Length: 86
Image (cartoon, rainbow, N blue to C red; front, side):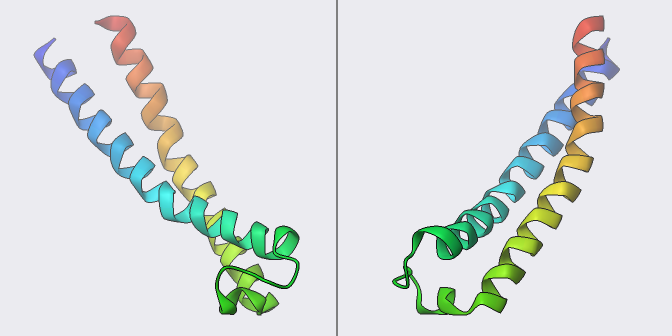
């Protein structure tokens, strides 16, 4: 069981890392959607008037979140299995 506890701590650290990595990606997606639909020509930052930049920002955020989720899903599954054993 000691190995399971050590593995569980390692998994929790990895989950925390990926969740922290998700913060800037979600901010990028949120700012991009705000610039597209909520700004009415007066965005928070002037660069958000550039549609190519906004679409690129949203695309980068979405692709990053998909990759992030693909890393988190197996960790969550393994964590659930280890917690059921424990």
